[in-house]
Length: 202
Image (cartoon, rainbow, N blue to C red; front, top):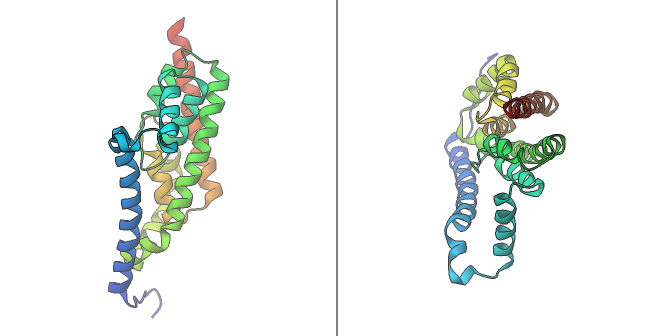
């Protein structure tokens, strides 16, 4: 029958999808646990990973261009919360505006690309959890009404645009359209924040 979607082995597919997502969530949880707690233990001292973490932290603290790049690169990931806009405003006090602006945009381009790729890789797992009918109805809604929402999610400060990019990767949203809308919003947002900061100094 036209318009009918038949589900085959739906229970098995859902279990496989949940297992895949649970495994990825576990890996992310272990990484976050290490960064927040385990790296302070003596057994983890003087390791290569600890050296990298300390290097990143030392640059973040002084708000230099490298620290700003790390914030955009890591804060742009959908599973790490970093108030990028607040850091950017403070970093404007110590760096040339145009160079800092470019550094942030480059970092965001890398991290948001990774968000989309991870979402894309999880697309099959998501389809196993969500019923085909619901999956395609959501995808249809995104394709029809999502352009303004995608732009606003990136243009408005502190909106979860990282998670939006990840979710759109799951639904295999057109990547060219997504990145045009997302980067347009990010360019506008960080440009406006730079102008706001400049006006506060006058």
